[in-house]
Image (cartoon, rainbow, N blue to C red):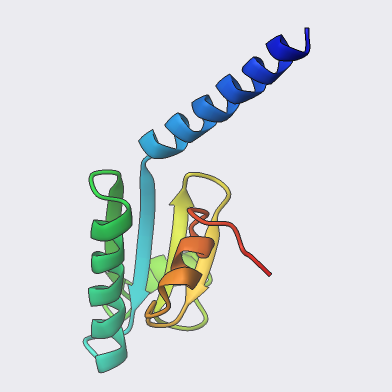
Length: 114
């Protein structure tokens, strides 16, 4: 009976991993114009998505100067801000996204290690 439980646990783990690999990510990056910090954030998030979420990521870039109502609706207080809308739970990251480890933890691709 113990073997059956262990096998079931492995199967559940494998299913969870398979589901995570197939999940689509919906990311929205809020920037303020074409400042150096905004450009860095755009370049970094595009690179990170290509490296870690190839084919599973939809990235929308929102300039708060061009779409202020959208930014206000999301309660954006600082830019650049990246919001992971899907998969749940919703996550927010502020900054130019130059720290790859922080990005991976922020979008739940990697758990924090203390």
